[in-house]
Image (cartoon, rainbow, N blue to C red; front, side, top):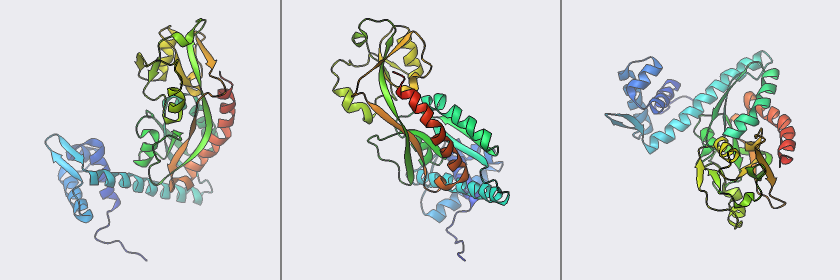
Length: 305
């Protein structure tokens, strides 16, 4: 049997690293963990000695992870989550009910609003022991997949197929192709002549080639915070927008949706998880409900324009 060594970090040491990173300081971490500040300092020094690297830059304003600390905290989160999964799955297997415990989900706004609710309804109806916890994350930069990579989420609803590679250790699978459409004030005679309203999460690498080939699309003159604000501005007659179908579910009657034709851009929506968590009962249960629910949603989305 393998033995722990003097260089192995114990679970309580991992929890300290995560708490310091999350709270931004040793004192705040101590309050979160219910221990003394000296105990936190001692634990961090011990972890740094075992790893052989400085994990936090200490200062008067708190503590910030070094590059080595960032890496250590990511793995600490993922290891601690696997320990939670180990306990939950062992308890569930003993009772022949293998899906129980928290399930941390990251999703971009339109997926959280229009895709997840029926999925979570089915999940709760079939698995009373699962506790879904949803965080809405902007799909820019590392986006929802980054939450999984950092150990902050078990599974993410993400846009796939962009130019940025998937972080190491993650796996992805597609769920639906989401078409884009021209969105404009209802009844406008020449919607393509209107100013462009846009937001930061729109037009990823999957639409960029199409976008740059359209000489009728001007540079955005109005930039909104999210797709809901874009719809509100379009509804008020302030411009037109190019938007994906999930963002258009439940659009007001004052908004018209026009098909962009056979060459219209699409983006792929799917899920991202880690190779370890992909086999866990809670993640597998959610994936089953996603695959059962999404085809109905996909039919609605593809007929939206």
